[in-house]
Length: 153
Image (spheres, rainbow, N blue to C red):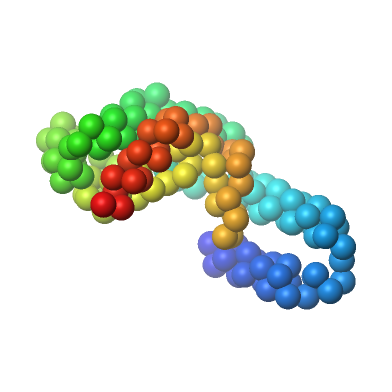
């Protein structure tokens, strides 16, 4: 299933950036890109999958899981406050809080959470960022940016 979407996105990029500009006007390309992005998003929403920590699926809709959302907010706030990823992971694991896949937290898992743009309500479709994705935002943009700047250091 995942291979299908990756292949579909790759073929679309090849077509969109190399062949399509010669055949369509700029406005037609924009419309085509929006339709294909919406179709990919719709295809992803049709299948049940384990979304990121803080979210659950209710039918075809992605909703906020209140308990997990508190954990995600806690991770961002503690990291922005200067605590290390290792310290946050140890604290979460000592309280028996696990990832969405029921595994203990690691520095890598926390780093991935902090870099995930879905927590501010955006999504990636291929190489493009969709401003309003299907994930409702859990944290504000300022906190997300601050944590990502600290992560780079």
